[in-house]
Image (cartoon, rainbow, N blue to C red; front, top):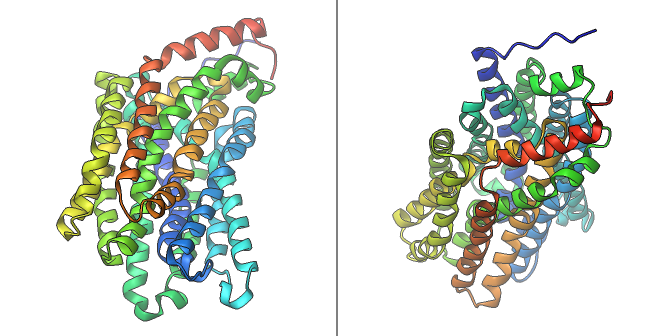
Amino acid sequence: MAVEPRSAPSGAEVRRAAFASAVGNTIELYDFLIYGTAAAVVFNKLFFAASDPWVGVLLAFATFGAGFLARPLGAAVIGHYGDRLGRKLMLVITLSVTGVCTAAIGLLPTYEQVGVWAPLALVVLRVVQGFFLGGEQGGAVLMAVEHAPPNRHGWYGGWTFIGSPTGLFLATGAFSAATAISGDQFLTWGWRVPFLLSLVLVGVGLYVRLRLAESPEFARIREHGQRARLPITDAFATSWRQILLSAGVNLGFNTFIFILATFLLSYGIEALGVSRELMLTGSLAGSAAQIIGILVFAHLSDVLGRTRVMLGGGIFLALYAFPMFWLLDTRSPALIVLAMVLGYAGSAAVFGPMAAFCAELFDTRVRYTGVSLGYQSGSVLGGGLSPFVATALLGAAGGASWPIAAYLVVGSLVTVVCLALTGDPRRFARESGSAERSAEQGGRPG
């Protein structure tokens, strides 16, 4: 029996998918990024107490990176089931588990109370959280992009990634509010409040996601029996170049953004001697600027092309690394906030179009797996390691910031080179899609 062709999603369905992706990704990133804020201002004191404060910071950022190490594995496992069973189911599972892990961190005893079991439990929860986030972002990207018309992939895909700065904004705002409310009791109980709030956010996210329809592109290949039997095998067989290139593109961006979002908090407080409130204010202002920037550059990518807009962003990141630290090192409150706002806003030129860029690299049959593996591999090598590397560089250089700026330049150049090698991302999807359909000889039942 012939399968009736599916009608294109209505405008309301497209907007609902973009909104649901944004809300879900906001909550997931709140869960993940709140750990980075806590690593900079709390965990080094309560879970990794050491005579040298920089040793505590280094250990705290090492566990921050541990969450990233689990992300590619989560990308492979959850991506497999996302390409086999559907995008929606995986997004509901990932949101639920990461939220529970976040709330559990807020209930953990400290090192002073239970000794080494405290940091061990923290690491376990962080790894589980990272595993499920590894499958979250790829699925959120696809729900937005696969619902959208082709000429609006950039705009609607960009809505997914406003979840990152919005999640950071909420995480930073929660810590700022907890600091103000708890006062001298912040390290006693105040720091726990932002983690426990995750349960409320997860409830909101599940309500939004459960009302969402399955991706129409996945529904089409399911109806036609064209799902890949082993998506990870097919992804590497037909799309290994795309996985490597998207990992490289994300590597430089993630290096920059996690230096900005996590390391600079400890750098400002410990090295520059400025207040925690000032650094949190800079993060709040920067997050707001990045939300606007993501939407602007996502729209521009629909007009000018993904790679052209992202190349401009990658070049900015390389050129801005040293000036950013020059502004920070003045210790001027206004210039510190300006430095962070410019960094967040400029990085949006890479981040805004990235959802559409990654999705367009892969054929639908292996898209969840391919997007997740490429994006999360870049996240590990960039974001997962960068706060730890930056802290080590700062210690080795006797407190000088120039090695960290040089590190950012190198990472940004990796992004620029990979973008230049990619060109139009859609050509890869056309090539891999043709290869897969040829191998399937018209498509076997999946």
